[in-house]
Image (spheres, rainbow, N blue to C red):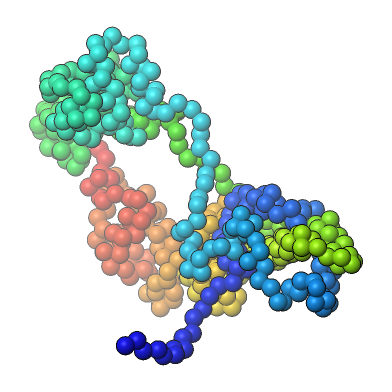
Length: 485
């Protein structure tokens, strides 16, 4: 038997306006401009340029506040969405309440041009190959990744040729065709390993004692070379330190990623447009919002006049009522969008101003050692907003400063205490660590233990594992791989 019962439950839901505002806040300048252009194209009731918003919408507000005729449509008594088709509803009104920034479609411009694989195929057209060899060569080129390598075993390629291309061959033939493909440009393409890639490039160079030694090192002592065991290399190849240095210099000139050197390769192009600008005027900081983030929008006067005409009309037909529903929906959307734009401008400015004041000493001097420890909550508490709002501003916005254009989130960092008990930014410690490593003796690079000891002497008592973490974040290799001769 079914049982029925009542249950009270509290839940939070975001209104369409809140969803719209969050989406707009997180957009950087260029994406915001595209969103603005899209809204202007989709909503004829929204126009750009100077116009008095209140004047343009007085008739619209007055009509729905004073409508009382029983034969007309009262805005409060009707669900407008029921009268609209799906394609008339703005996308921000159909989004799930469980909105996530990760769900956004992100688009960026791409460079035009021939793909890397097509570039290799074009070169193959100049090589004489029989039908079987051509099929194998084309398959091998298709297996080349964006770095220029073929990272699949010959046995796997042999099976794939049989199953997918109906080409039955043997490993000897595949290796023969592979050697032909490896003669294509750029040098080193279609290699199966870094070692093979570098050797192929050396084979194309004019033979000199340094080139010959470099090939011998790669073929016979590649593991010792990668680990920079220079003393063992000198003993094994019976050469002087100067000869070894010249050979290593030749290897360092080679390209470990031949695919990346192809200028026609399709790749992402990122254009950075600063959302804010900070200037120092008479010793004080001056913040300004990029004008492209503050467009002048207003509600179409023509649409307002349509509503006014409907209000003054004595005979209101069904088609007129349907029309006014459409007009009301477009005017609603226009007013919501304009309000969201204004709130976006205010939120961006308030957030960035709080960040600027928090890091005032840095922005006045440009010295990264003056960066204060700062987390999202610090700014959120300062401006009385949610942490997620500050995160949306910081993660995708750039600021133009006298010291360069930087991503705002770069100014956020955790804190550590120095030997005097003062809170210092981890960025300050990383900067000092980077300087110490840059000035170290490259013949005997400093280990993480020694780096920790040096930082402790400078007043930053941090553990060796913390030094290793910061070093990796700075993309600096371990001491053994920093060694030079």
